[in-house]
Length: 99
Image 1 (cartoon, helix red, strand yellow):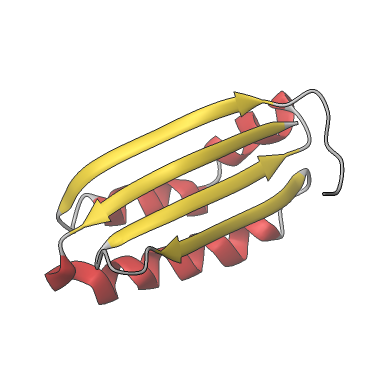
Image 2 (cartoon, rainbow, N blue to C red; image 1 turned 45 degrees about the horizontal axis):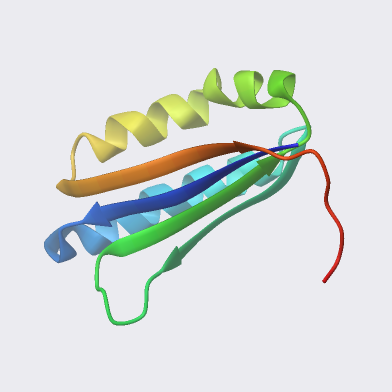
């Protein structure tokens, strides 16, 4: 399993535009084969910081995701808002169990 986790910092003036982009990419990504989860959440007390967590069944599923039209649209849309910071990480997970 591959997990992508981290955050995007968006200028609060562009918050609504960024949320619209996130909703669209979320909805399309969740429908992809191999997507286990795809979520954004705004950090409490830090307006404009959006955390992203994605989980993918395989390298192939993630590679296919990066080639989708909705990812191209999301990336192009982000170019139109003020992204003031970005810190994203990839994790290769070998085991998963409930807490």
